Image (cartoon, rainbow, N blue to C red; front, side, top):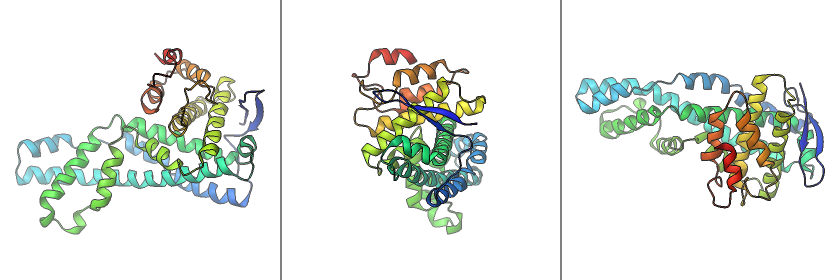
Amino acid sequence: MGGLLTIFSKESPLKIFLDLENAEPQTEKEIIIYKEASEVLSKASELLDEFQEYVGCGELIRKAISEPNEDNELAAWEAVIPLVEQQYYYYQFYEQIRVLSETLLREICTGESKETSNRLVSLQALVKHFVHLLDFVVRFDHIKMDKPEMQNDFSYYRRYVSRKRSELDINDLVVEDQVCDAMSLTFAYPAPMLKGVIDTVNVVPEKNLTSGLSSMVNVFYYLLENRKFESEETNLFCLRAMVGTTVIFDHVDEKGAFDKKSPIQIKNCLTLLVNFDPKQQSLINMIKFSTKHWRDEKTKQALKNILN
């Protein structure tokens, strides 16, 4: 099912038909990018299901620390190995998401057409995949916030390797030291996937990037406000994209998403978000805690009151 999208401007709204559910790539270049994105994103659903079931080995780690002996330490080590392997897989996927987000946004925001609206129309299949990417990013980071044991497991792995390095076989090490450092820094963030996307997309020229992001936010808002999708799943999918794109815009635009001159219809977006049924507290929290300018003094209290 397609949707009638509006990209707001200071004049009259520009109405464009954009099919976020069934759009297919048209040009040879778009087909190549689309296939690459499809290959990465095809793994997202299974990864999220697996991550949701992640259970740390905190009890064994606590016992190994409080009652240190060879048996307790070995039991904790053997339990933590498959968990670190799991985390390493997430980190590898994180790197793929970073590369893919740069590829998609570079093409969507700086394509052949000078007009953002024309690019969104001609590259709507890539926009669809960018929405899929944001859906994954938002859902992964939401799960991660409920998994503090991830960092505890990884910390124990690193401490054990540091103490037992001379006794361990090289094959016992799940990841190299340099990768360990990168993983530790990455997963220390409350929302690592979103942070990775934000850090990566800065390679796109700022003017093109902010124009493309703000247009997409307004597009997602229009779809939701006018109930262009019958499926609850699709509406939630679109809501995550609206929030995720708003957060990215707020980080890459100097004045942010909440400035009075922001091209984003931010008051409308926030009102829609807070009234969405069922309530999406995790997405509301993303606006409050993952944006850059929400807590600025210049952000109007009237906007903050919408989410309070």
